[in-house]
Every structure is written in C-alpha cells, then in structure tokens.
Image (cartoon, rainbow, N blue to C red; front, side):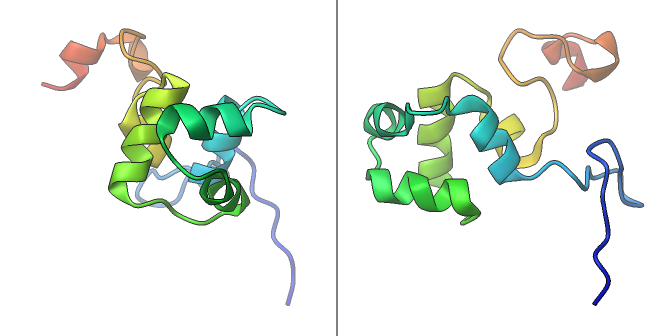
Length: 101
C-alpha cells in the first residue's frame, strides 16, 4: 500500500484538517517530561494519558479534564476548531463570542 503524505494545512472536502489530530494537539500542550503532572492535575491515571498521547481517544469527561489541566478549550482539543484558548481571536479575526453567532 502506498504511503500518502498529508500536509498540516490540508483539508478534506468538509474543511476538516487532515494533518491535525487530537493526538497532535494533545502532544502540543503536554510539555516533554510533564505528563505525570498533567495527568495528576486532570485527575487521570498517568497510563491513560500515555495511551491518549499514543492515539487512543478519550471519553468526554477525560477530554474535559485534559482541557482544564492544559488550559485549552475543550472544542479546540477535541476538533482543532476555534481558538486554542478562551479569549483568543477565532479564525478570521473574530472574537470568540462573535464567532458563535
């Protein structure tokens, strides 16, 4: 089977980013060597966090806990949509509140 390279900014026909996964986003907000601290702040077992960093998808409660522990918006962590942190500008320069209308 041929291997296909996907660029981080490529999207599918529905506008979903192909090279940007939950695991990529989680890795970007869990500093190297800080996994145990993040897991503890999230109230999750460290082995569970390691599995998420390897590609396993968390349940909604774990996703919410990880978002709180890392200081990012749950929607961004789950889907990559919208601003990474509350109060940041949404894509296109709109405020988060304006983007929700």
